[in-house]
Length: 132
Image (tube, helix red, strand yellow):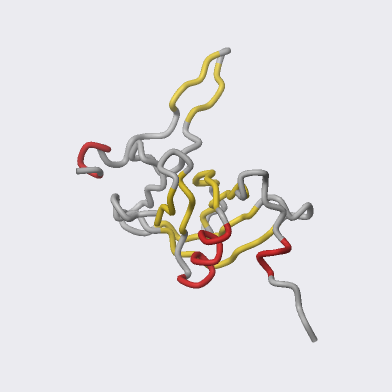
């Protein structure tokens, strides 16, 4: 019996990308949002670590390749419309985990307070020391 390739079941956008949310498996914290192409999603499944597609650089981005903040992938899920991927990950390389290039735990550190965006989460590590 011929089964459809699982990658073919993803609804890729016009650029061949799908949005991806990385969620910390242990806490449920939403860490970051990124994009994947077919190759990135296939590599993520194969390696058990997050591999994204960098739109600005036009190439695969192995999370942690520069920072050392690798995401170990425990679960890959596809939403009901087949157009968003959720990764359940453990953020490695620093305790507590750093997912954001700003040196914070999560990329979602700005909160709307009194009509303005305020950074409400601390910088855990100076980005200058992360990206040399």
